[in-house]
Length: 539
Ligand code: F6P
Image 1 (cartoon, rainbow, N blue to C red):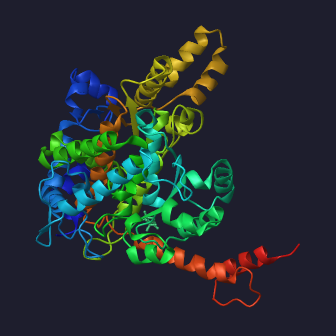
Image 2: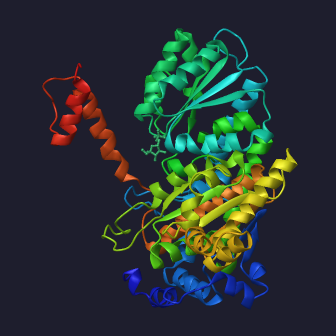
Image 3: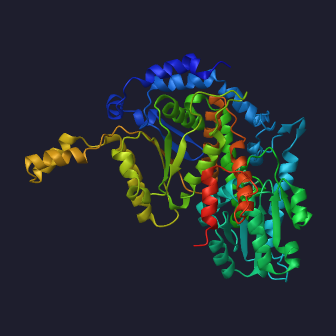
């Protein structure tokens, strides 16, 4: 395909981006704007009426999706085409939540039986542990589970377990360790009894430094070789390494090479989620994601929630020079969601070549950031309202709550207020008039108004979950997975490899070797060498 920037739709969008758009004017001209620019799917409501879009812009964006064959690429995703071209693999995370169990063929054979077998193994293990058929090494029942993993082997499970505390269906306490924060690990181990603790070593490669380091530390904590057989399980594609480590074959939960780490919470990597939620709620999580899969495959562009979110993101990153996008949940239970989306979008789309390996001359991803609200209102919202950056915001709310309705109402009101004020701003004249009415002298009022003015016309979407429950969380995560994929498909890049993270790991192991050496084994630049020597100083 010719460079996408030469496409007719790209040219049309470039022209449209030069036309100023005033959001408040759009609402004045169209009394149905909220309805016209809202979508409902899988118990989610997406209000994108406060985005810089018109019907013409949406039409041109959908034309871009058409000219870049998005629809065909979506079918490729679900049918197991080799989309991960650099590793010659498909990306079939959608098959993991294919609760309809329709066949999914890979190299001519249906993979659903092995996916179901893996899921059944997880369920059987959950039941064995919670009915005390599977006990710890000295015969006591399991009370605590430690999930040891990082990146996609941590972020998804940790997000779901934190978001769905209200849907616990076991007495098990689930804990997470990821980076080498030994203080956290030691504090955790102090509070636990090895005899009643199950350890999940979660690593697709079974070669991740942090995870294996933690594994050894925790193994040492057990002080009992029998423990490995009873109190340790592994989730990995690398069965050989797990067996070498001492994990029983029956205690290895499989993951396949066609499941990317950041798309893996639906696989055996989701074992800690199942251990917390129980079978029914875990299947509801899968069902929500499956519903979003069907919506993504079957819905025309203008009504397609992941596609519209992807196109709006591209509208800002490609045609308005936005480098970052913010994700701001007004649900404390979703506080891990912005970080989850960081890996999902930045590790998937942070690339510089297209599917053929040719350099691209446009940004391929946004810098995704965010934080739990209303904390963010007291930290970074100043820049959003009066800074010079244009940063589109995704506000995430839930319409109903299980507990604390009063606090929930305050959160919801704040979320709506921030989205509204980003749009309306407050002009200098209005502020000056208000100051004068409050008796501030003319000169002072004029000067202060300059500092208090807020430009407004700043775009945002508001995504409202009917309720933060397993089904809606599954739909929410799948929504963002498909948004990221659709962006990559339109830009013609591979969303499913991550070669950029490999070299750093290799160099870290070289530096670790040299950290205490007078004669360095490896060659370094002067800065790295100087910092190494700094570490070695005895003063
Ligand atoms: O280094 C990045 C990465 O490979 C992620 O893609 C992955 O989710 C994480 O590290 C953990 O990898 P593993 O599951 O193999 O331990």
